[in-house]
Image (cartoon, helix red, strand yellow):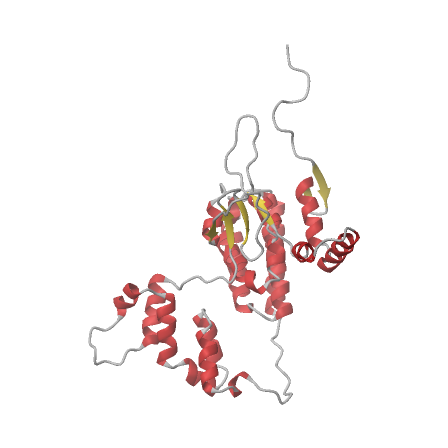
Length: 335
């Protein structure tokens, strides 16, 4: 006799129809919250807390948003609850992270890895989230006039991924054509952008600073391409960017002693061309990845969160966190 009643396994998710197709109800609610005006949410929260007469520490704590997600890697026969990549991208607020300068570099590297290898094998929902993040990144780059070169390289990688995965992707052909159309629009939008020249208001320019200040500024830049581009703008900046001491510091920062000794000349009385050594080390080993803010996973509750924002862990004892590079973050999911 068949069992007539509620299934003993976990209930299915509720779905809602949106302009972009069908989405899970719980993720749709999270997206609505993410799209709300942050100032309006903070003002509503502040007014509600004032009615309850909270302490000052509670007001400051609730004013900061903490995007996080509990990562579930295992499952049982009674309940299947695996954390998906699309759910992680929404709950970690990747779209909002593009507007934060400290997290934008991490998101750009993550999108590069996704477009380079895993985009065709993602689900249709995950593909739409990735494209939405790309759209937000392009809009923020044009608005802030920052990371224009990085966005051009990322869009080129996206076009290559869409063309290569045209015949063996997951999802409908109509959805894939829509992705390609969106990426082409973003590419055209970025190509039409023109950097605005600063008006001559009589204030100091970068090349007007003392040489010692310029050395300190260029020593803090991790990407050698930005250093070389700055040196092409004026004669003064070119002299600073060509100094051996600057490229020596960049070599010591990005590469270890063993890597540098691979190309260091054995003769001690020879002038060392540190720029050439950096170029050769970069081609063989690649430069060191640096991020102002990173994702991390808690050792107690397995909560993935941004290090600068933290997460509400239920542990009463001190807990440790493990930093996640973009490659480590993608390796958590079964792609």
